[in-house]
Image 1 (cartoon, rainbow, N blue to C red):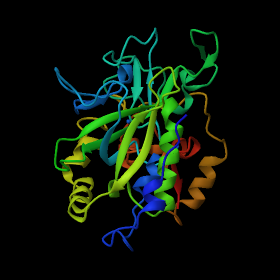
Image 2 (cartoon, rainbow, N blue to C red):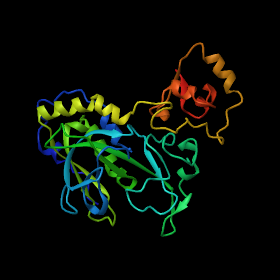
Image 3 (cartoon, rainbow, N blue to C red):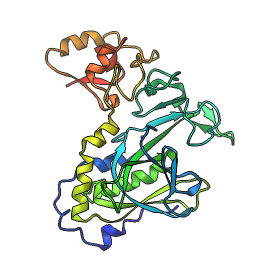
Image 4 (tube, rainbow, N blue to C red):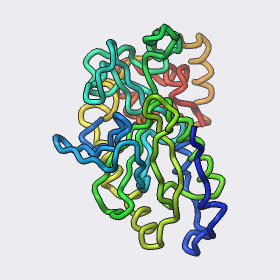
Length: 306
């Protein structure tokens, strides 16, 4: 497998406008999230930009492209999920169940496999087998990168889905950025294919530093309302990105009999706060949904007292 080259870190000096810059934690989201957003497909070892019914090849088959990564979804170490009951027929086929935040099924899923991803039987390795008879986890993990072309930082966002077998390479890339105190939007990133893989496996390589003007523009886009609207759609009747009705707690995770008493003692001294496991959901959204209580939120790791 091709490795994640870091030549720009060892062979060229850090530009003045990046020296001493306060690094954000965006690169940590690479270490290990379709809606209507235009996407860059990797099917058939071909980078293809797809926007509704319009397709445009970005490079000849097998050749790399360069982009600027503006955001990763879901952030941090969370992973989005997709489940297909039958054989996967192509990237234009909608999954039978999916979760953009890796916590609960998306709002459009008609028949969720489980109320919460943590307790889903399809989210367990060995729950299924591939065509070769090997154990697999039927619900696959992935992330998506929100990118723009290197020659137009203000172009429309496009999403690149990073499949599970490419997450190791993505993680290595993120660790290199963290090591050098850089955010994703400080460098141009080459997306290429592992030439030794029999299926499209992505490789991520930093190719150069952004100019000061492009860096400022990229940071502005990373902090823009446009991006936040894409990553966090405004909730309607229920929390966006989750089940149509926020799922009830997983039945197999019972509440500790003595937990309620301990909570009552701690409550006057501490504030109930959602954990990273809750993803984009707020405490108010959880408690507004049927079947959720403070005790169940804490028992299942979605909240804690601080």
